Amino acid sequence: MADGCNCQIAYDVIRCDIRELTVAGVSVPGLPWITSDSIVNFDISPEIEAGKKNVLRCGGVIKNTYQAPDELTGASVKVSFCCENAEVEYVINGSTGMIVYDSSSPPCAIKYNEPTPAQQANARPFEMRIFMREVSGSSTTGYKQINFYYCLPTFCSEKGDQEAYATPDYNIKCSDNPSYAAGVAKPVRSWEMVVTLPV
Image 1 (cartoon, one colour):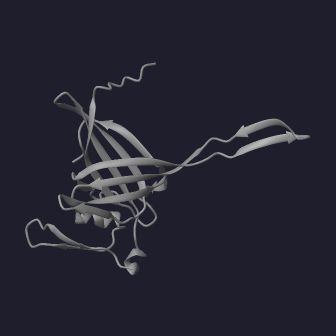
Image 2: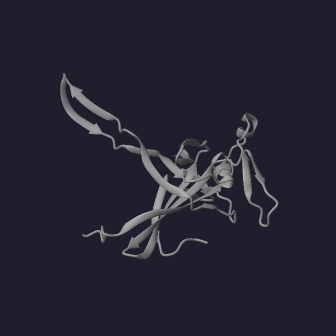
């Protein structure tokens, strides 16, 4: 059966949303997503535990072999942004540290202090979704949404030079989430095609 894919369609990463979970990894209904359209690229690497191979021998002769299937245990997601976002960094750092806002209305984040070791003890996991725009010719035909349901807190690395702004990079470890909601377990990741971006 044909897969229905059109390989002439282009994809463009355009947005990253993150939202904190409880310490136990439970999603909080109604908690707003922190949205950033400054994401410039991402790279997903699955973490796989190789299946164990069992060999049955009799009198030194191999009688049977069995190879257990590999098991997906998590994913490592590298995400790069073109500029800092204090609210994004706060959540990725485990909803710890301190954001400083200016006096404008609505207030704008102008500073972020990374957490102290004592604050890191209270770090929370978070969930993340990445959106890619599907483009055919000059028209947007939809969006691919990639979901990660349990992400461990981490810290950014930055690299800059004389002609480029320092860009924040994050290496995020993700796993399945058996405690996402009452009676609801989530996998390491999922993806879906959506017609519009969530507001």
